[in-house]
Length: 366
Image (tube, rainbow, N blue to C red; front, side, top):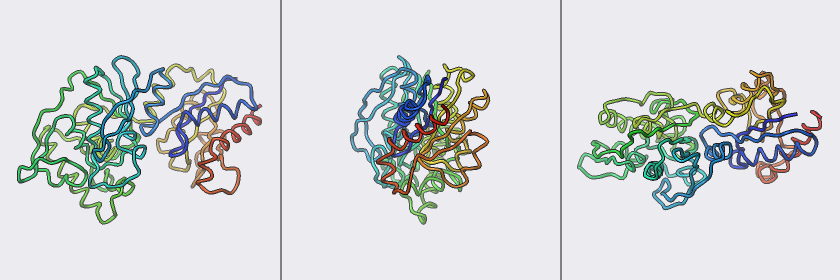
């Protein structure tokens, strides 16, 4: 028997690799099978680790600044001599800080890392866009890559989410991106501005208050108007422009190509696996509900399995609203929680709970 274990992370609890290991260890207690681990991601946290693990790459440290221009050491992934992968989440996201200061937050660190990687000789970059705590349209990132932003008085601005409305002029020359491939990995299709844009859709979780949304969106609109004039192009309504607080928009302007996060990662990570030789697939995420059907990674994996007649079993931290609508995709769905407990207890005990659940499922299969 061959089992493919391909879960997403349990956000703020277990990495995708740790979820996969716990699934394997639980199943191994009750079933004799070849188990293939492929930790997954959709562009958010774990994107670097998913690609590094599956493609036999390596993690490398790199120094930059966080969303408030404070020095940090983070990491990127090396796939081969010319290909690197980074994720926004470990530069300017919750993996770095839980602070919410949207007025001061900048994507500068992302641009700085891109610049350093190009200077180190990488020519193909995969950028996971999930998990940012910025809302600056990618202005800070473009600042790090060579652009300068000025207000009406000619004062040079250090751009951030709060002062985009002050920009009246852009100067400077971008770092040369000739022959550089930039692939954007995102599960977000929002435009940059408007009711479905970055600010109104994701601003609150980044610290923008309800009564401030219109002001921040107006600032983003002003920035886009001026940047569109500078580049003589308009990507503000392109799918994915609103990803990562608008970093998607900034990267589109310098040649970035947007890919569906879950699908792109799956194409890369599962390219060496013949699914017709697999008997079961195990996948999961932190919480599953009806929204999982809208492009989330577990359904992406299940669809691939179903196309080859492979039964897919979902094991998640919790099952939420209308999860039963997903039975067209999964043979069965399971929550790891085995009794009344607080969220804190479930997170603390997640390894054991996950292994026990998979042990039970393995006994049933066996």
